[in-house]
Length: 169
Image 1: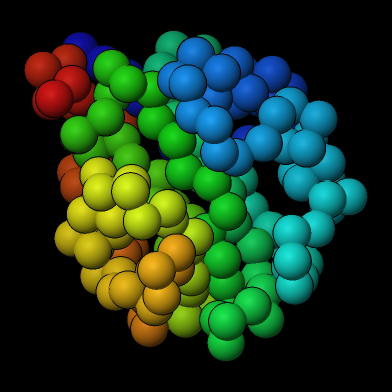
Image 2: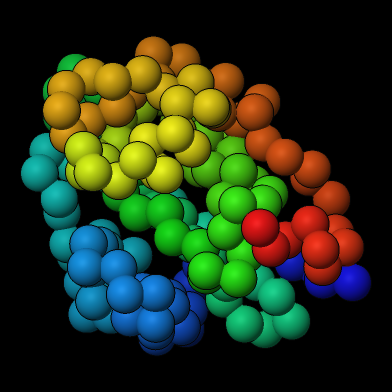
């Protein structure tokens, strides 16, 4: 059985998060220095406001995914999903859905229901993932939840332990 837990990230998680990004071949996002500065509030994406949140999916001490977001005034949104990345072995399952749900719940607690995410037009998989969880196209590069509550409600199983075959697809 896999024992994946979801928790708030700390600065100690940044090297693992950056390593996951590098290992996945993701050209987007940010390296370790920017991630650390984002987590401490020293890096501010366009129109970003405080506060911000970062959550990780932890499998026996190994970070297998992360999500980050902040409050914003960008594009008429109250929140922006900054990064969401899951290790290739855990894609297509419930890990990403639960990371998104954790961030969506955080946004709800901040009173931010309209939430945007920048998604490259060619990233069909991510666009489909967000659309299945209630986001709609805002523009060629942006998707939006008019009410991010649907993303929190659209999570997969919320138990921390799932059979290994459910985590890889």
